[in-house]
Image (cartoon, rainbow, N blue to C red; front, side, top):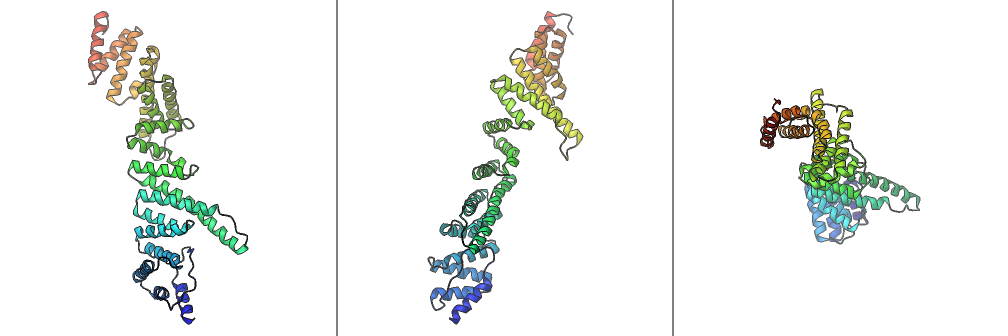
Length: 375
């Protein structure tokens, strides 16, 4: 009896304080298992204690104290920064106790320490699932048990929110766009109502672009634009997609018009100079009007094309786009019988080294041969 009291006292002094679920029952110090547990309780050196705990799980994996030993192991591995082993023990604890939120949470923290997006994704899901089970559990009728239940439910809800945050934070930090997308997708699947998802809209769009998945970027952007048309980058991509596909010209006009509206009213972001912001606004508005003008040109609506392309011209800083706009203006003005303007635009286009140079020169020669007074 004295041996039993001694070992329990040692364990009370040595026990971890991070939310253990498994309590150590009566230990018989006369048995090999009890003697090993006694050694564990008496060992002050952390590394040697871990070795003894590992020895116990190897020799007595089915012992009733195994859950308590696994908790001691996970706590010890955590302090020793042995992150892979923290997760290994987490798997074992959750296999016998799916509501062991603490073990799942510690495993998630270990995955974060390793900066491994696949493990973070795995353990965020496991942690959330475990936490939701606890949060949904029935309240006990016993008053003391009910107090403990309330504490655990509150903790589980906090951990569940943290599992969402972990996916969100690591999605923002990861340099690989495909891994970012996997983390964001995992968050959306885990909690479609997460408070962090709205903050990932633009990072998700950028990740699609950086991953080279233009189809997914367009589909995602159009989904977002159905309810929020504040992103000029999304408007630009979707408008250009409709323009290039030569489908639904009305959407080209709608999206480009919205781009001009958004950029005309959008306040300068904090930390951006007036010069840089004005340049950005001019670029977007110029491209929007260019795309609208090109769409009108393709539909042989030359007056409307001219109306959009003229104000776009001084805002275009890309030589190829400027040459294309000049070419369309030359043809449009010729069709509207504004011959001198047609010649001027064709001449400016021909002066630029672009794919439109040869065609602009031919058009200019035709104009000059037919209208001798044209300069």
